[in-house]
Structures are given as structure tokens and as C-alpha cells.
Amino acid sequence: NAGVMQNPRHLVRRRGQEARLRCSPMKGHSHVYWYRQLPEEGLKFMVYLQKENIIDESGMPKERFSAEFPKEGPSILRIQQVVRGDSAAYFCASSPRVGGLVTDTQYFGPGTRLTVL
Amino acid sequence: QKEVEQDPGPLSVPEGAIVSLNCTYSNSAFQYFMWYRQYSRKGPELLMYTYSSGNKEDGRFTAQVDKSSKYISLFIRDSQPSDSATYLCAMRSGANSKLTFGKGITLSVRP
Image 1 (tube, rainbow over the protein chains, first blue to last red):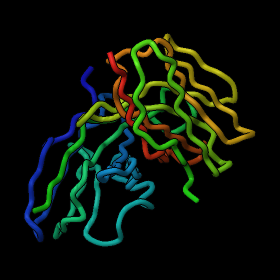
Image 2 (cartoon, chains in turn red, brown; image 1 turned 120 degrees about the vertical axis):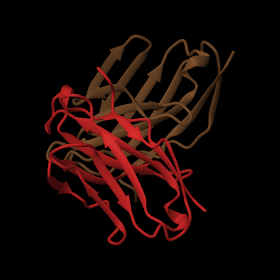
Image 3 (cartoon, helix red, strand yellow; image 1 turned 90 degrees about the vertical axis):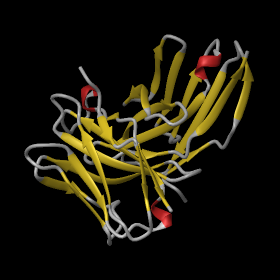
């Protein structure tokens, strides 16, 4: 059973370009979460999605950032007009459902390391 | 005040030592508590999961939760060089699935 997959693992963009980060959840998982880890900082929640729905985007910057989880295919985190401050590791996590059970915990992918030149 | 505070590091111990890692939190709504281990340039890996006050043991690892004091701990017995990693505490409320993390502490176990 493959784990959470993220690609690309490393992404280099120049200021002003767009960055697209992809996440395929574990098989059987229908909930996807995106987190950002800045240098010397802990992981910060960005957005929580189910198929075709954004459930909680309270951690998303108001501008330039968007996320989707279509009916078919991976979840996409999109950053438009990237700036140097967007350089970070972006992690995706998935869980089978919402709730308090142990099986509902979040399993993380290996991350995409974005570098903005 | 941050919602989750984690003891700052880094922490260096000799092989075989008992390691104690601690987090405090301010949000009374947090009900579920986790410890993740993150090796350099890898994704976080779930280590322990608890939801009630008390101790939970798994091999060399013990997670402790004190909800009255809003304090959680992770103990590592007989520490090994392979335990060298960054340890992140994380927690969430029952109604909201997003995880709130501590800043993480980097542990180094010297052979």
C-alpha cells in the first residue's frame, strides 16, 4: 500500500512564476491537508480538502494561493506569482475520514521543497 | 501566547540515555495528541497518538498527557543513534481536523 505521494520533490521557480504542487493521498483516503514548513519554524496548517470541496482554508494566505482536490486526480496546491518568502517545504497529509479515531490520523508525504530565486 | 509551545533545542544525549521531550498548550479544546518524528529532509512520521490523560507505552516510547496542566511529554528509553531526528508534538480538537504543531526539537544521540 503506497503512502502519500508528492511531486515534484524539489521545485525551483523565479520570482513571479507559478508553482504547482501535487499530492496523491493514500489509497482509501478521501481527506487531504496541506501544511507549510518554513526554515526554523514548525509545520503550519494551510488548507483541508475533501473531493471537490474545500472544508477549511483558514491557514491559506489570502492572495496568490489556491488549492483543489478534483473528483479525479491528485490534489493541487497552486502558488501564483511566487516571491522569495514562499520558499519552504510543503507537506501534504491524508486521512481516511474526520473524527477522533486512531485510524483518522494524518499520514504525511515526503514534501515538496520549493525554492524561489 | 502561541497555542503550542515546545521546549527549544537542540538536545544532545549519549546512547542509552532516557530522553524527555515536552510541550505545553493553551487551547482547552485540544483533545487528541500526537508525536511525529521527522528525519532530515523527510516527511513527518507518526510515532504516538493519545487522546486521554495518562500514559501510553509503545516499545521504548512512552507518551504522557496531563490535560489538567495542558502538558504532554514523550519519553524515549535506551535511546539509539537512529533516534536522532526532529520530534514534533501535534494536537487537534475533536471538531476540527487541522493539526497544530509545536516548533519541533532536534535530538542527537551520540554513539
